[in-house]
Length: 170
View 1 (cartoon, rainbow, N blue to C red):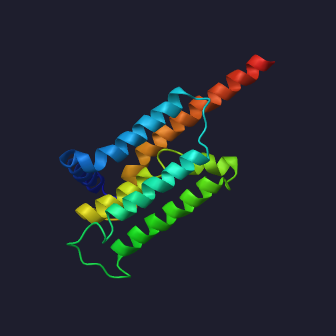
View 2 (tube, helix red, strand yellow):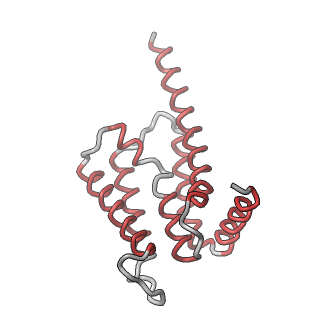
View 3 (tube, rainbow, N blue to C red):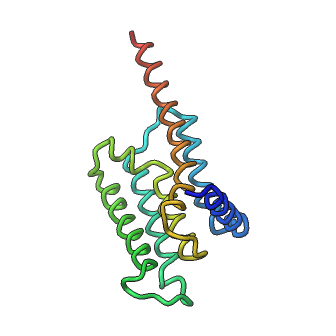
């Protein structure tokens, strides 16, 4: 992959987010605040409530980029835009129902309740539909890398907390 393409795409995404902060900053800000909370409070875990919140974010994001909210875009059933909206909505409903019914094992609730979980597909969908940013692996990587880095910091903090508690009990 050409490094200039990566830099160009990052620049494009940063300019979009900076130029339209009321659209993107609530989702990015909520992710950062929730992630920092779990980094600071390393003993807390994501539960079914977090899974339900993730589902709610994805359902509302799907609605906001759907033909119901955006009237001036042409839609067809098998166009990628429609599939993105339907995928976000169905995935959000799946998480909402499973979070509400508390039917996920703790390890899956931990994964699906992670604050970065709705950010990556939601931001990709908004950038693709609203701004025409390609829905590809490069965009995915640009959005997912910061999410993964903070998730690794959070996981490291939790592991150190568990190890320190383990040594305190002996």
